Amino acid sequence: MNDKSKIWMDGKFVRWNNAKIHVLTHGLHYGTAVFEGIRCYHTKKGPAIFRLEEHLKRLMNSCKMYHMNCEFSEKEIREAIIQTIKINSVKDCYIRPICYYGYGKMGVNPLPNKVSTSVAIWNWEDHIKTKNNAGMRVIVSSWIRIDSRSLPIHAKAAANYANSALARIEAIKSGVDEAIMLNMRGMVVEGTAENIFMVKNKILVTPPLTSGALDGITRSSVLDIAEDLDIDFQISDISRDELYNADEVFLTGTAAEIKSIGEIDNIKIADGRTGKIATQLQDVYNQIVHGKNEKFEKWLTYIN
Ligand SMILES: Cc1ncc(COP(=O)(O)O)c(C=O)c1O
Image (cartoon, rainbow, N blue to C red; front, side, top):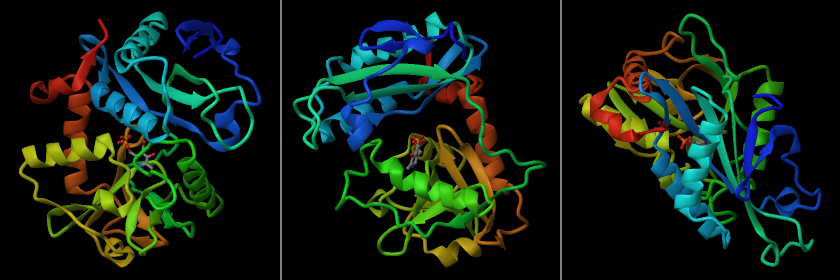
């Protein structure tokens, strides 16, 4: 993206460099913003957004949990996303709609403030690059994942990401790629911005949403793909030590897609490389997002 790119702000397109808000925006001070991370992929029928309806639904649910009276309907935000991709003439991109309590009255109570909405897109650059199928190196974070007694964790809210950011900083300062977070019961929840899966004895396992994991759209897609491929799966709690002896561990997310973990806390996972089931899932996922799998084409919204 460059200065000529356009960002949709409260119903109008503005130039990238002019997409500014007031320094006393409520969401900046108190974390009262909810957002989505969506991907648009290049296909032979032009750009296509992956699981747009599910992302919009989650955004609306997040707004509800923060009592946000969004000026724009789900349908209008959907249209804003499509128009932002069209006006910027991109083939693929990352899409960030955000609703936030804006400038108005300072203080913890956000309700007197206007709820603003914007949609920005940019080129996605993978922050974790590994070579020759090597898995990522991760640690288990010393930061415990927030749980629903403190914040509505099923809202994809800016406030949750302070917890994620601290864990990600801890990982980077420790010289590894990413952190895995445990919940208050000591069970595995997710990565800082990804859901987690392990494979043991050919069975795919992922923690339940009651662990505190976000209801990830990639997680749900992976479970549907696994079912279609006749891969057995179960949704159950995973302990930290179960991960060390797993046959495969991988993370899933809109940004990360399906990314294998090769090492946790300096302990190698199997041979440290992307495993058989992760590879199988990655192959099908890649076909789907690029419009090469008819069975799951219903997950794509074509722009043209
Ligand atoms: C904390 C957290 N968990 C999981 C995910 C994965 O969700 P999705 O697959 O919908 O991108 C994300 C990414 O949004 C996240 O931030």
